[in-house]
Length: 102
Image (cartoon, rainbow, N blue to C red; front, side, top):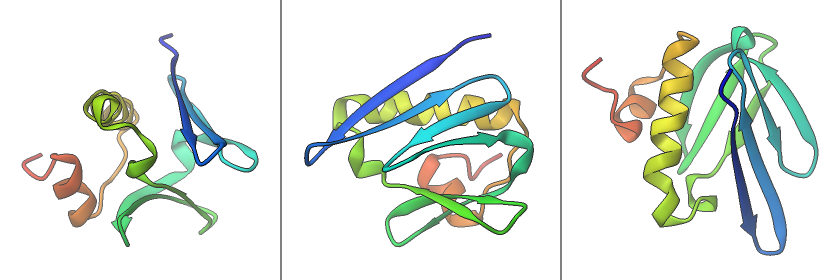
C-alpha cells in the first residue's frame, strides 16, 4: 500500500504522521500507532484536530505544525486516508477540512 510521511519541525521538536492503509503512526513526544478501526470520530476544537478513539483517548494534532505550502497536500492526504477507512467527522471538523458537503 501507499505510505505517506510528513515530518513537521516545530520549535526544534519533530512531529511526524505516517499513513498506512489501515493505521497511522503519530509521533509527537512519543510514537503512537493508531488503527483506523479504533478512531470513532475526527473532531475540531480549540484550533486543533483530535482523533477520538473507542477507548475514549484522543490524539491531537495542530494544523499550524504543517507549513502553509504543505497544508493543502496534508489535508488531501488525510481526507483520502480517512474516507478509505470510513472515519466519521464532527460537523466543525468537516467544515474545517472542506468535507461538509459529504
